[in-house]
Amino acid sequence: MLNLPISFLFSGGGGGGVLQGTTCEAILCTLTAARDQMLDKIGRENMGKLVVYGTTSSNAVDPLGPLCDIAKDYNILVHIDAAYAGSAFICPEFRHFLQGIEGANSFSLNAHKWFLTTLDCCCLWVKEPSALIKALSTDPEYLKNKASDSNQVVDYKDWQIALSRRFRAMKLWLVLRSYGVSNLRNFIRGHVKMAKHFEGLIAMDKRFEVVVPRNFAMVCFRISPLMMGNANQKLLGEEDANEFNRKLLESINATGRVYMTHAVVWGVYVISLAVGATLTDYCHVNKAWKEIQEHAHTMQS
Image (cartoon, rainbow, N blue to C red; front, side, top):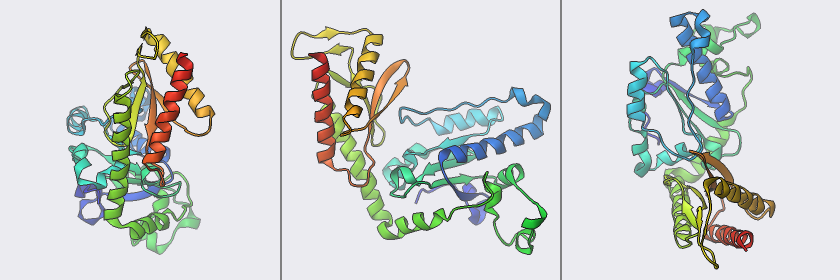
C-alpha cells in the first residue's frame, strides 16, 4: 500500500520489516545498528565523534532526496521517522512526500497513531536486516534450535531490544482485512478535509494565524501578535504572544472538553490541533473552534 522501494522488502530486495512497540523502540534499534556500523568503520575508540540529528514538532516533511544525497556523500545513515504522517502514504496524492526514500536506510510509521490500530504497533522497514541482527542478536544455548541455525525462520528477537514479542501483527491484520485499502484511504482523507476546514475557520478570525503550512491533518496555529478583538487592536511582542498562547492552551485543556498540544517553532509557541480519532467528525472540529474562540475572548477582555 505504501509503495516502498523493493530494497526495503523481504521479497527480492534484501531488506525486511518488523513490528515494534513504538517509534522510540524503532529509533533505538536503528540508532544502535547505525552506531555499530559506523564504529566498525572508524573504530570504537571514536565513539565520541558520532552525532545524531533529529527533526519533528510541526508536521513538516523534510526533502528526502536532497538530504539522502548529502548523507551519502558524508557516509551518514538515514532513518525516516514517519510516526504520524506515514499512514497517509497509502493515499497516492501524498506519496510525493516519499520521493527520495530509496536513499534512506530505514523507515517507520506508527499504525496506532492514524491507522485505526490500538497501541502499540510501530511498523519498521530496514534495508539491511543484518545490521540490526549484528547489533541486537542474542544467542545463548537455551535459544538455539535447528530452524534458526539453518535460517529457515526469521528470529525477530534479534530485530528488537526485548527477547519476547507480543503478537502485534494480528490487530494490524484485522484492521487491514476489516476496512480494506479503499476505506482506509477514505478515513485518512476525511481527517485531512476536516483539518482543512479548521484552517478555513482560523482564516475568518483575524486574531489568529496558521504558523506553518499544513501537510496532513494537523494544524499549527496561534493568537497573532497583532490581536484584532472587539475593542481596539492590541500589538504584542513575540514573548508576550508566546505567553498568551501558552495560557490560552492551558485554559482550553483544563476544561476537559478539548485537548491540544503545542510546539515551539523558531522561537514561536504554536498550538497544534490534530484530527485523528476514530469517531471525529465536523461537529467536533466546530466545537473545538468555538471553545478556542471563547477562551481567547475571555482572556482578551
